[in-house]
Image (cartoon, rainbow, N blue to C red; front, side):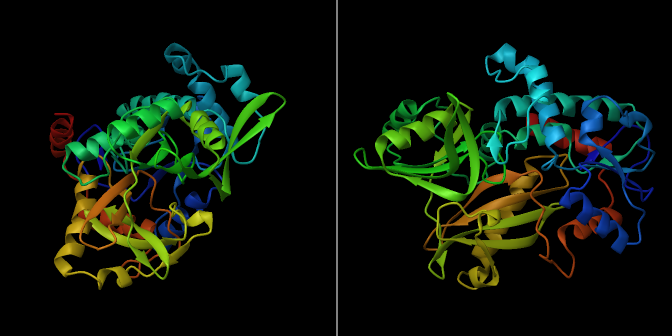
Length: 407
């Protein structure tokens, strides 16, 4: 948990300043949690207002307040503004896809992947502004530091951070920029089943599971490639696309790699009820709390892809308590790699024999699990209750942990 400047510490005011998107389900559920605890509603600071300089957090945050930075969600105006904010940085690094003016003039196109790298660079730009503004506010607490949001939204850097902290993770194959480079990396490391993930995607956006024996190829992906008026566009689809034709496989992966990807070994997952599964574990205040089992007949388990939620108790009873505890401890260890974050959603895999586990991803906004309870409370209520009862660590302790993480 990040603690802002000034004297004192902890969430003492009972007030929340919420950076989010109006009409977003996350915002509504969080407001419900505040109401259930008898707390005043959060003051909503829309992402688009911050991006356009219409608000200044230094004057909006009071002493002892909680600043919650929430996902921009599906706010299209905010998405365009983020892409626009990333235009200068994207141009300097050669990844520019839309000028600032073109980004702001984009029309809604359901499911389209516009410019993930440029969007991310815009996110970094606005998070830097948020950090600067909060440095001028009275002492407060935040659910995430700006640095951790940037880090967890870059799958390459996030994977490196987890591995450096001893968290069991799949083997990374290094950066690739095309299908040909991907094949070279796979052959060079004798790894013939991989996940290719958009480095800055979330909710299975821009994900492909790829397997080859050198002759046969198969890719299962959320990505659909569409030619429109001579322009190649990528779309996210809830209906998974499966390609076996080598030319189609190469085309999908070439287009995906052009947007910057993270590649890692495709580890086999344990199964139940004729489905493979993994777990989403929400770690709050250093403790693993809510656990959701995600069952799927495909390699990609995200629940919004019409996969189903199972009962994690079925998993726990299949192994010794010590092994289950070690897996949850790995998730807690993963959050500890990001001092300055109060919670995160960790994706956890068990191998088919239930003897080994690995953390697949750290999701900075991975607590949207409606209806999933831990000790009778949903994720948002648990986060708030933890802050009310446990308080915030001292600023000095935060700085020490942050310095240790940088080493």
